[in-house]
Image 1 (cartoon, rainbow, N blue to C red):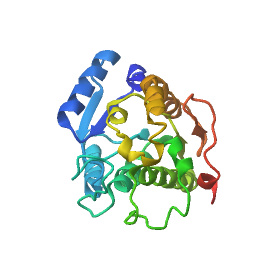
Image 2 (image 1 turned 45 degrees about the horizontal axis):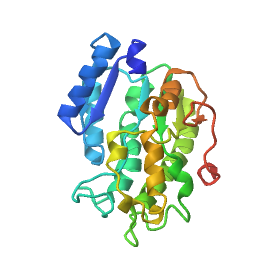
Image 3 (image 1 turned 90 degrees about the vertical axis):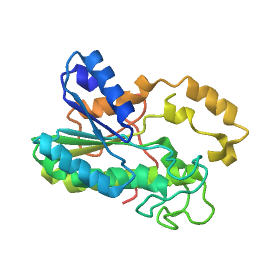
Length: 254
């Protein structure tokens, strides 16, 4: 909404057509123009991300800002995220949605980004990345001892490692890459989480939910809105309050 109100053309993606079109109608009303569009895509499926790039290129000549905000607890074949699931590609579902999806869609949209004079990529992560311990490249599919939150924390750590590598690689193409951890927000995705996804936090679960209920989606959106609209240097990392932050030492390890 912040970008649309500044006159930007905004393309929303998602796997639910009715919710996507509803979001577009709400954003168009809030922005006062019809330059908001919806493209249906299931980001957890890698071929769908490539198809998204083809459909985008058929309608628009360039992409100035890509915000990789997709993520969460996928429910593909099981009623709860606490159960290990795989996508149609055979990837563990949380890894696919929270890391492979932004990787794939960014790669597919590179031609559109390069067509912009000063494109920006903003990767929306999570402070959970700092809670993953161990080698993030071991048992990548978490076939042993699956815990959703462990899968999520590792995917967000991988996303940050990739963000810094991408910033180095794309700087010569005049594409800036930034990252942010927006903190919690009381959204449908957060409300859908259950304590089974956080088995080690059972004692703290009521406190955690109390804090989440008071978390503002507007505040969580602040950092990515700033990174998308300002000419920040590649690799800049903003915390949830929109101020410069610092990820974990592991995320900064070359």
